[in-house]
Amino acid sequence: MKNLFITIFIVLSCNLFGQESMVNSNSIDTTQFVNVGSVKQFISIKGNKNKPLMLYLHGGPGAATSSHRQQITNILEEYFLVVHWDQRGAGKSMSLNLKSPTLSEMKQDAEEILLFLLEKYNKDKIVLVANSWGTVLGFHLALKYPNNIESLVAISPLINNQKSQNLTNKKLINHYKEQNKIEIVKQLNSIHIPYENVEDLTIQFRWISDYKGAYIPENEFEQYMNFFKEWEQQWMPLYKQLYAINLLKYKTVFKIPIYVLIGKQDLTTSFELTEKFFKKLKAPKKQLFWLKDVGHQIPMYKSQEMQNIICHILLKSQD
Image 1 (cartoon, rainbow, N blue to C red):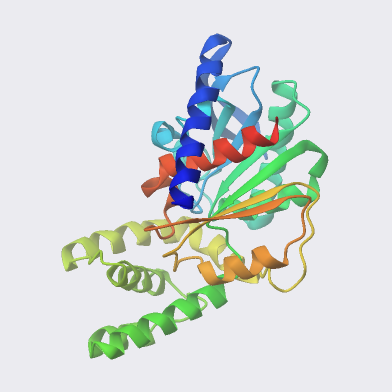
Image 2 (image 1 turned 30 degrees about the vertical axis):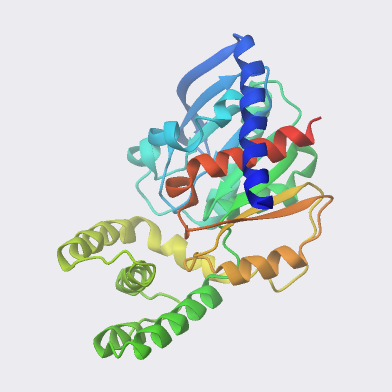
């Protein structure tokens, strides 16, 4: 009953704010290419120029979201000026930069985008909403530019890839051993962690999906494999750099509010590690939100709930 009341309150709160936002007609709906890191990169801006500025940092790496922003941020665009940025090598920025970027290049790009947006829209601060891989950039910006960031919403954050994948593989192996599915156990035991190639990634992805009740038949799995083999050429070098990240190693101290959203079934970035990280981090304000019946893909499968939570916590903090 308590959870039902909270859900109803969140929805009603967002609807009330929506009525207020409709009054103002200073709307923006535009796209452009900007020079970032000596490479032209695509941004899509939609919302009200008098509302707080928000930057959405997509996941992947390489999974740009500007082309389906209608699903991911349509609610938020009523209360914020929302920017989707296709990171170098992704989405509409892909053809302008085909070489594999480094982690340091991506962090520098994020810094330049942040400062560009603040200047362009004459804002002192920006809200960051970061998903999965995007949280690597979000945490970096939050630590480096605390005076320019209002708050950070971290969705399915990347905490420690190697430990997360080991935990998941152990869980999967135990599960399929109990079912006496020896061939699946053999496949899972063949995986190298850290991943050496895209086959390691794809095999684990397949049995995570099956474990959660979404079996991938052989013909679909071949399609996934082909997709990830193309992805591998561009992104595997950067992905391997992410294994150096371990947010549990030190006590992370932020000077801004941090809000974390986790899927209760997330085995891609382990929900157990995310909870441990949240308990350790220090911030002026922090909140943890659990989303039921979803794994790693919160923006895809729980978009409305995600946006209502974000809308509620951020607009309430402005009161």
